[in-house]
Length: 268
Image (cartoon, rainbow, N blue to C red; front, side, top):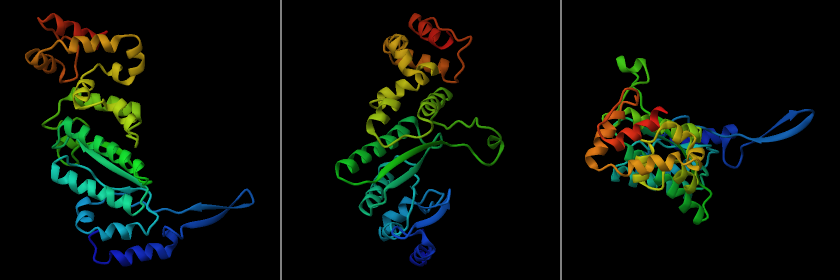
């Protein structure tokens, strides 16, 4: 992307038969001639900042049969959101249909940042669909783990703004979605919650209530848990979250009857 020879690189790819209009190839199967489409996958997250500064690069990429276009969405600050959003519109305007991005979490972010980025993608998909664009974004949340030092020896790294119960809650949601967040807004809202407040409540639920959500809605367990959770004021909420933040539930006790009843939902 940063190469001054990008245009020639793109032309070389096209000349090899991977252009958007010349990517057919024929092969024989079961004695019959068949046709498939070649495609190009730059198997890394392209830098949105380069595309934002040089929108002509997106037009160059659109000449190639890219599937998918991968762009990293690692930050939720307003400046980067503007850059990222403009890049997505550039992709749509240049008729790049398949967009995939990595949503890094458990790094310098907090849970609200993850929800915000996923929601932005879901809303963009709705805008594309309503505007007649064929571009769709598929999100892949990726938990950060160091690659150097002692913390690289396991998967136990904990970001400064996360606790283990929140990470486990995200993992439970992603188990149900098979690790991917599709382009439909309704799908996102059902999986992660209608808004940030409901999302923050969801990731504190017992994991069986998250993974087997429909079952526990129907049998009333989720409603009973929710009724108790909503009775916690700020002080009791802090106490409860401190008790289960390490994602360990045995031998946890409280003098408060509401918290004690809530804890029973995690050990039954």
